[in-house]
Length: 411
Ligand code: ADP
Ligand code: ASP
Ligand code: MG
Image (cartoon, rainbow, N blue to C red; front, side, top):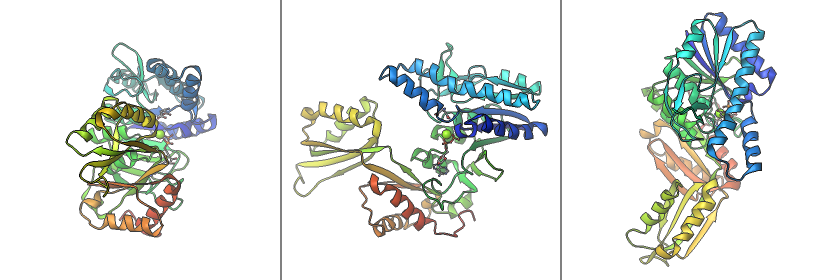
């Protein structure tokens, strides 16, 4: 059997954890399985390198940042190989480039174009465990690239697809994917399975358990994988294509994103082209907008309207500046910003076939005395913006409403 295993930052945080991961790899290798291990940088290392770069220059060059950040994973592959050697297991470490991972040239958020796993296959055929540095690849002209934060997940999924692995396991510091972040909601329930679409929504709406791009990739190439703990032997969560029975569960999980900020343009002239101008300007500055609300208050009705929208917190200042730049041409009266907000989303494919979910969500928030600032919906999710201060409480109130204690979420 060919197995791809990925160990995240906390699972390789120190030599003892690396030995622990090596012991798990050994178990499979001793059963004659072929094992490809993908590792992250030891926890805190990537953040530390970013901080160091910013202490030298406020906006470091992206190409140099990739050279720098790739060293984090390069340290772990060698340490993991050494830990396996110490157990008498032949093991070879490979950088992303040596493993044949080719990307486009978008430094710091590169996309994988193709993988030629010749070297990996060669090492496996010699009976070696192969350890590949996650989060990195190279361009056709051999520049080092990285795949965006959390990108080791993508390396693992992409390698599992390229190698047609029989099993893909994502080892992390929790027992699997839960109905909500188990660190924030102590009675969150571990899911036995979840569909790609649900996992993708949860991840892109704030649950950092898996990088969202890795799930898009898994869906596209139909890579079934398991998220499980590197600290115990409990079965984890299987992520796979939606099955009919999944629709029986209305809400699969709840996620929270505290990285949001809101801007409000007041008294925007109510005429064709106003909104288009605002969002064209933001798009031109590569600022993506999430939720949008436009409303006519009684005193502004007919002549003007208010437009509110959300952006990622790091883009707030830039969004504010580019909008002020077009104040004259659009003719709005005021521009207010609020970074004390959070987005909470409920996700489930069962919403497609069940009604009354929004009423239950809004009712639970009302009962907890939490005001809803904005709402947006799609076929399988409902998101609300609430005050940052109330966000943790809102998350727990919603969890209690949708997952009453003792309910089995995996029929
Ligand atoms: P790794 O270093 O292994 O990649 P991450 O820190 O990136 O691990 O992701 C695991 C973390 O994701 C957990 O420690 C947990 O706090 C967080 N998390 C957020 N939402 C969820 C969820 N719904 N289920 C499980 N973990 C979640
Ligand atoms: N080390 C990288 C990060 O911290 C990639 C990863 O851990 O997946 O984002
Ligand atoms: Mg991660």
